[in-house]
Every structure is written in structure tokens, then in C-alpha cells.
Length: 385
Image (cartoon, rainbow, N blue to C red):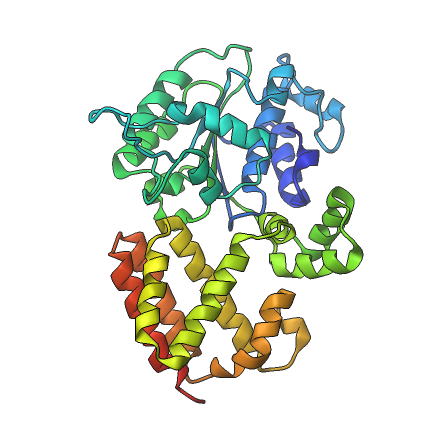
């Protein structure tokens, strides 16, 4: 994979290449930012760049051009280079023994298939690929033991060894402590590239030992241009989608799909509001049972969608089109509904949804959480500014 496959992020690309050219590459880098903006793509492209460097000296990388594009190694084209190691959240399958701690290698085939389809994929897509249901994926202590073993070996190609860690914030405490020791005393010619969305959940001692690079959202204009160039989308549709994407290439791709998860979430949002307005407690109970049937990652994504719709409906009342980021279907509903989200209830609704996200993340009973959520909406919707 090369940097040309990364959507936007020119500033970060140049910063990474400059580190190599100036021979000041740190042994541990952490790319931070929201989901869908290309952190994983940057990590993979940079890893391929490092593993393609001439063995005689890294300064020769400048010969390959300003963009850092190099002739790809055949093994890198298939992401099967022996010095490229991936770490990612996993689950424990029923077929695993009671004393077995899941490691990335247990799901190597699924990871490789997912990655070869493109580096832009979500946690939910990964969970579906490994057959997860209501489990929450983590990185276990067994994974850090595997990393120690792999990275202690000499580079098979005589250059760098690169370890990409996707979502290190999902490490359990035992894994985090072992990784800390590995980062403090890194094996020779080893580079760690972490791809992180919630750095505050990482140990402070780990954060202090890595060079953090904040990756910004992709400009809407860049997304619009890429949609036209790569996907053949007409200008009008590309403009609307680029605004809705809010800097995320993943969200832009989701908007292109028919029957997307967002459409399901919108139907659930509309149903919740209508039932709450009607004070139909019996049907609200059924609604909460439906929500409880989703996996916890999907439940949290619905609540994030709920927060976005709350914000957009509140802004809709100001009648300023440039402030709104809604699909046509969302806008059609908001025309009549927006007046119910106002100064009196928008903050309590936001606080309630964020509390639900916290409770779901702490493995609270989802039926209770969502039924209480639905009942509170009855009270909040009748509040007027």
C-alpha cells in the first residue's frame, strides 16, 4: 500500500516522510483522531514505506520523490511482509480453551481479508468479520507476549520491523503494562505505530513515551473531489455527501450504500420520538427490547447517531442551511420535528444520551438502560422553550 491510496491527510504524510528523511524517526508513534479519517490507512502506508527503504541508508529515500512513493515490494502489495506485524482487538470464541488468551494471530485470516478490501473499515465491520455478537473486543496480555516474541527476532529483510497497533486503548491493564516495558526498551530497528481514537484511555506512562500526531478531519472539499474521481459521483451528490461526512471518508462511503446502518438508525430514531410523543409505554418497551438485541458496539453507535440528530434538529430551528448536515430523508422528518428540540431540553437530552453511552460501555443491562432512556424522552419532549 502506498500513500497515494490515503484520502487527503497531506500534512501528516509529509510530516512522516520528513522524519525519515531527516533521520529523526521515533521508535513509537501514535496517530490520534476520530474514526474514519484515515489513521489506519496512514499507518499501513507509512509501514510499507519504511519496509521499502533501501538497506544501504535511509537517506536514499529522497530519490523516490517528494511524495515518498516507492516501487512496492511484492510481499507489501499483499501486506504479507514478515517484518510487518499487526495487533488489533479480538474476542474469545466458544471453540477456544478456558485458559487460552485470544491473540491477533487467532484472527489473522479474517484481518488480512478485511485489510485487503481496503484500510477504511470500522470496529463494527471488524466485529462482524470475526463473528462477534455482544462481546466487546479487547487486546489481551497474551498479545503483548506474542509481540515480545516476534519483535525479539532479527529482521528478515535487514531493515525495520514495524508493529501496527490498532486501537491500543482497548488493551487490558495487563497488556498495557507489558507493552509499556516493550516501548521503554524497544528491540533494535523496531517502530511502533499506534492508531488511537481515545488516547485518554491509555496509560499516561504509555502516552508520555510515544510521539503523538493528531490527524485532522478530511476537508469536505477533498472528500467531494475524491468521491467524483474515485467513485464517479455527480457533483451535486458529492457535495451533499461530503458535508454529511463531517471529515470522515468512512461516513462518505456509508452514505453511498443502499440500506445503510444510518437508515436503520433513522427509522429507530423516528419511531422513538413518535412513541414518546404519544406516550405509548407498551410500544416503547418493545422499542427498548429491539435496541437491547443489538451488540454493544452497535448500541453505542446508535446513541452517537441520536446525539447527531439532536444537534441537527436543534440547529434546524435557526433556518440557516449552512448550519445543517442532514440527508434528504433526515431533513424531511426534521421539518416537522425540529421544534420539539429546543433550548429547554437540548442539554438534558444530550446529557441523558451520554450517560447511556457510559452505561452501555460499562456493561449495564441494555434493556433497562434503553427503557429508562425511552421513558425519559416522554418527559423531555413536552418541555418547551
